[in-house]
Image (cartoon, rainbow over all chains, first blue to last red):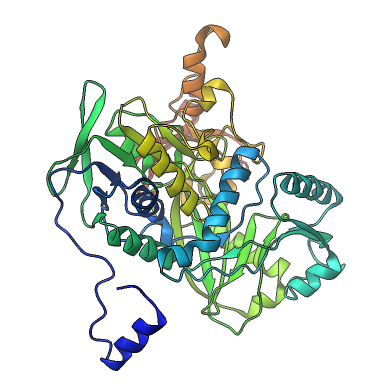
Length: 417
Length: 92
């Protein structure tokens, strides 16, 4: 059933008893054309675009747990495309364009709110860097506006712009088209839209091994029996190295915890996304009223989906020094997501040495905002066995060849980005 | 999380700086001759889910480099010793 005003009226008249299931729960078949390992946002998007753009509908998405339990539901929901390196800027701009039409395309409201993404700077050196970045964005056709301290005050009155602030605000670089998206709706929307096009979404089905013959993938072993396919895509950020290991691959990725926090809900106080250059701190108010924010990585390899106390205190200190009025708020929840961190801070959408086996991962902090373009370009790669021009730089070999895509100029330690 | 420092005893996490995988061996010879080994050394780490040998420096204390064995799934610390073998006889 298509979601529409008439569907709401029709179902209201019959007591909302006849809404169909959002997606089917099929038993896995013995074979598919394409298997996607991992039913997160990127995996579901890949399956959807395989069906929508390439007409490949005999596809299974295999998810170890349930939809939406991984990083697609463990982020700060921010979308923007203000990236400096041209490989990243074309990719994330494509992603933002897809976000802009996604609700209509999926027939599912993902609640995109283009409230603007504001990067605040505090020193003349940071201002110079922001101007340089802003110019680079303009050259790449990405909207960006340099704003003064007075304008920051108007855009985000919560920010302490007084001269006595611990980190005085000099101004900011604004991307007006940036904003936030309801993250669960992204998982559910892609799942429903892929399902409607014939994709099998199979939950509680863990991949336990790969069938590889003479350097070519033949299928996967799962907790619900073997399934064959001539093309397999791995999209399991957070667990990439462990899953790839089963296919004999070593990846330049480390797993690190990033914590996110939500305060108790309050009335609307912040209608833009704000990021601060003085610390790794970004904040957005959710539609339910909670202030959602995050800080730095915990700083060491981890697969535990929970965070440590020093980072938690550090983030709270940042919050209060940038926005002193937050000091009266209480934290409602906090959680840790496992990030695939790469040596240059950029992801992989690539072929592997095993024929027919493709890999998507290493998303660092860019995973959520990259969801639609990641699915779009990964589906292109799987369907055509050729990288999409917007993602052709995201190879595994870039560290050997020196063609790294290093947004921060940090590295090669993955935890430094 | 607390890390037992062989000099200073058990100290809180924020006194320490992480130094990464301690199992990597710096390759011999010049870079040009041995590129594959250098790429492996710089970029490819095992990213273990389980017992991980890793460097930590006690920057807020004795400033010694340590090799700590820690479970990356639970953050349990199994072993902590000086990174420099000559110091290990001084271990408390």
